[in-house]
Length: 316
Image 1 (tube, rainbow, N blue to C red):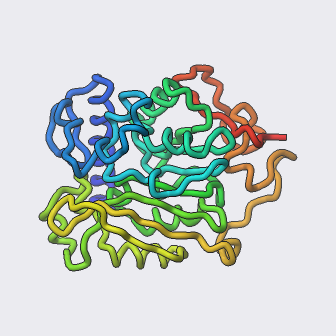
Image 2: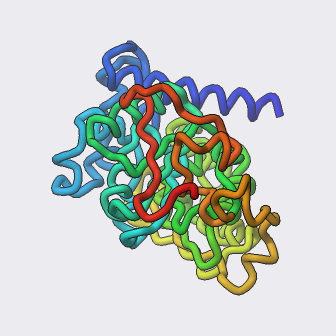
């Protein structure tokens, strides 16, 4: 347990340093694709990681710092088949690039959440969202092993090269299943090992914070998703990031027929306000204290507070 806590803190500190490097407020960093110190090196990733994996047409009009802070191994928004009106959750949202792209795809009737454990990345993401003028987004601080959303709160879960960084991957997969509505789906970009590459060999090929040592194999991923309750799981390799290690697209579905039986029951209403389905995403920020049981955001600062209710719903 102590070793896990040390790994979590190492990951957190490296991503905090990367956020400071993007904002010019720090001198050290290093995340996926980079383990060395120095602000310039923090943002210098090879073709296996980072903003180069996105279509420039999709990112040209995003805030520069959102693009610079992209340290993932894919483009999950391109594979999740997002549709207008859907609710999306990005696990390990970092500087916010995938949340902003998701918000654009789901449109004003949809909503995009980002969850991240690193305060510096959350600050950066909120600034980026404010600069992008995104109103259908909200960034939440939390661990991807314990997502701060209600059951069945979203239609799609995405993540970009973050699951491999978790020290409790079964918990992450279980949380994905829990927060998805029946019939919901996940589209994840991650580093995945070939089945013949042992955990020891993964450690030899790269560090934990470099997104290599902690990667699951293809079989381990599929088996883990099945254990969490998912169906139609698939892992598609896209590009090699180290010998026997690949950037990959991971897809799976939460069954519609059996999902209700596995979900923790929630009250139908709260304070005479939203029903259960709406509680996860539709409460107006100013009404959360009464409706959703969460503190209202009263900062009044657009840079620090960019959450907003989808246009199609809200507290009654």
